[in-house]
Image (cartoon, rainbow, N blue to C red):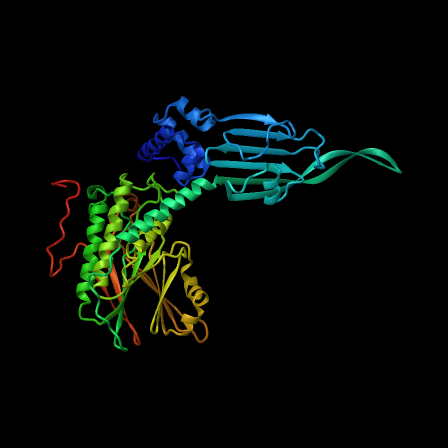
Length: 498
């Protein structure tokens, strides 16, 4: 997919930043969470746009800077064929006296700063351990990020002499390729240390609950589920180009907080003993500095990435403080297809921010699907992109067998399609029905969804679950809406007159 000019400009900016820092191609790829080959293709497109100088591009991609070079050595040549050194590309070829049956082996090492690649093609080196030994990799310095092993058959001519005479015969033998990608442990340790320091800093700023919720006990109590999926904060929409509303991170934040307040207001007469708050499901619109989703799809994204993250983090924290004044809150972090990596980091920060609050519990496990078991109710949460809808009931029964057996009312709440639907599944034999709901979104249409003709009602929904009687109804907060406590929402993010 060709880069848009805006995306190419962002990538060119990241490229120039890497050049200033003295980074290599592998380091830029790691920072942007991209494959090396994909990054090279996209940088080449930036070059065609005229955003990157030809000479600078060749120097960066070709490794002509930072002291990188190449040399060819043989085993026993006096040059250490280990990866304890850095800064060069080594080539090793057997001299015909190799222990390999084929008479030769290749060992390629490419070390650049804190990244390295090691590859062999040989009949003798067949495993990762063999590669580590052959390349003399110091595992106290390096860690294996990932590796691949391939095997194929090669043919060779061989002289055959037996009682019937002599001749030439083609012999087929296996050839193995073992390749590993390495990263210096010092860098990994530093990143982990900085991350731990940030988490500890957030924990130190965490405060006990200012308002303790009233305890609710007995059978006549409810769980309030607040799930606002597909907010896609960071999306930029000019309403005149879609026939709809304007949209940016500030609007998204206000819609989110107003919806939470409205839900809490409308449920003020219920005995709420627990609030289940589902956070994620494409809470953010993009997952990297290029304004792309986790899988690399370009978005209409606000380039002020850090500002977007800051506003979203503060918005979620403010909403949790509002909720915990009513009842203890169980936060379920559910990743989406736009922000899978970012939402996990967001969960770490939210959990640290509420470390000293006894009424907010955050489930930030890397599992794509989360569950809540409350009395006779079992509710599953997933983004819904990867799972087949008809498979959701059996997934629930398989992943939560004990809770399935102890529940009577079972539902799945998913997002992704931005369109409210309900499906009824009849379980096999003695099992009850499982309802699957597709929840609506507050997000405005962007130009792509508008061009496809997609339309849906924008709303935030909350569900009430009785501890012993099951599903008790839901609240829908539509937007734009008029509340008995607030004036009509008026936003002018793009200036007056728009």
